[in-house]
Every structure is written in C-alpha cells, then in structure tokens.
Length: 308
Image (cartoon, rainbow, N blue to C red; front, side, top):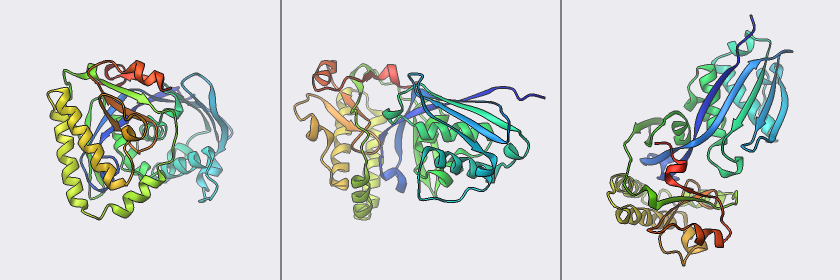
C-alpha cells in the first residue's frame, strides 16, 4: 500500500528575555511567530531520502539524496555541511525510532519556510520539531543529541501562544501565558540584515557567568515577570532597557542601541543571541521612517508577526 503524503508544521520563535541565562536556569519569555516551516513527506524508493528544502521565496536552498546506509552508519565528521547535519539529525532519530528506516522503501521529503532563512526565526528548531512530530519522538531529546541549546525555540515550535521557559535539571518547564497588552501597536520588530556570529558574546558569557550567576538569574527572572505584567508601554520599555543594560555588563558587549541607534527616541532590545537577526523596538510613534532611513527595511508590527 502506497504511503500517504503527510505534512507537519512548526512555528518560528523570538526570545524576548533571558538570552544566554536561559541555558543556566533563568526563566525566559518567548513568543512563537506566525511564520514557520512545513515538512512534507511522501513515499520514495531505492532505500534513500530525496530531500528538497525551499526558502520562503520558493527557491531551493538545499537539495540532495541521503541513503538509508548513510543514516544508519553515521560517523562524526569535522566537515559540517547541510547534508552532514541532516544525516546527524536523522541518525539520532533512528536510534530512538528505527522503524522509519527498517519498514520503508524510501522517502521524498520537502521542507518549506514561510520566513526568509537568513532571518534567524528558527530554521533548525522548526526542522527538529517537525521531524520529531513525524517520527513520534521527543523533540527536546532530538535537539540535545543533534544541535544542543536551551530548547526554548523548540517549545515555541510546539505552542501557539506566548510562553515562559526554563530548564530544571536539564528538563524544560514550559508555561503558556496570557500576554495581550493594550500597547502592542507600539511594539515593532526590525531585522538587522546581518547574520553575525555571536561567538564573542558566548565566550564572554561563559567567562563571566559564574560571577554572581544566581543574582543575575534572579534579576532576569524579575525582569521577565515585569515585562509580562506591564500594563503600560512605559513600564514595558523600562524593563526591557534594564534587561539590556544588565546583559551588556554580563556579555561585556555594547548594547545595539548604543552601537547603531543612539539617537533613537524609544527603547531597543536585542533578541536571542546578541549581534544579529531581529531587535524589538518600542516607540510611541511608528518608527518605520527612522529605520528605513538607516537602511533597515524589514520591519514588522507586533500583531503582524507574533502568534497570539
């Protein structure tokens, strides 16, 4: 009997508070996005996976064949390519659920993004969660054995509302929360248009994290709560600015506002890893003209990007 075509879908993500410290148990606030990624699976042949990945504009950004033999006999390699990464994920999935290879002829698999791949909204986390859905395995375990990371992005892939996320003894604790402030029309997301390595910030974090780690976590937990509970844009912005200045000290890194937008009348918060992808902006007036003039043309209003 021919296998039916099946589609899985996962949400993209934005980490609003708790960046870096979430790895050490801080309570982070994260928002799933309306944009995400689909995984479409149909029957193939020749004991192989024919894999095609589409970007949001419909262009193919990756295409290759992966044999079942390559998956089952995966060996760690120094050469990191899209293909070797995929094989690693599928191998780790195979260790948990080998039936998908043992009982099938092959697969045609397509992935389709609805956000541009370079935006950093979760190409990897949505893939991990989609594969986990398909093979009925634990997405957080699959993340740990393939990419690593805190897992907040996988939680966003699964939940259709804002969440808080923390790790306790390495296990995720996820709470769906109500976040429906009256001032979302004053919140914007701006793409910085540079995929930047955050290695320096990560290195500085690792060096500095034990200098008052528990205090830093307590402070960020408090700020996460203030951000979520804010009843005015002024309260919300103040908590974001405090969070940004605290992380600036921990990471020994200049804030993005000081670096790029020091004349901006409003608050600016780095999201996720510092130095690239999106920033969150709060402003009493629409700031689009300001950012466009500086060359930043990809700007979302809160309600156009966030799943609520």
